[in-house]
Length: 151
Image 1 (cartoon, helix red, strand yellow):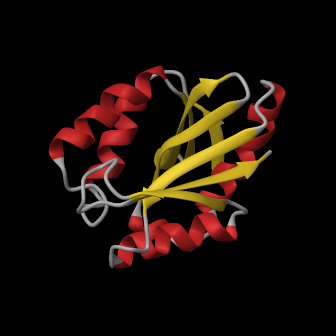
Image 2 (cartoon, one colour; image 1 turned 90 degrees about the vertical axis):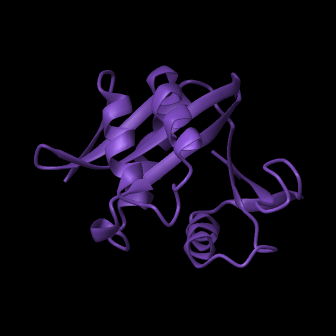
């Protein structure tokens, strides 16, 4: 497996992987927004041979701060260190750009949701620190947890 920066076809990679993960990405409008938005992002993908199996899309808020806009891995590749590899690959690239902090938003623990319990656990294991919960950013049904990591 190899991880590389991707410049073309980002939307297709994003859409294919997100559609395979309905437990996380079942809202069509949000899914299509990500498919469009990743075309403007810093984007890395992990490949198994010629097949993209995972990606991370990063957007700049300020020169010193980026956000993981979306990251996804085909379920058959979960728990193999691929998400960790994407973070480790993107970290030095971000540091070279002068980025000091990487943030991510996910569903908070105040909503019981097994897939997102796993997502939060992944980010905590990866060195992210919870900063704040926003109960209404995404609506009452989807309380948002903001996490941050110093690079």
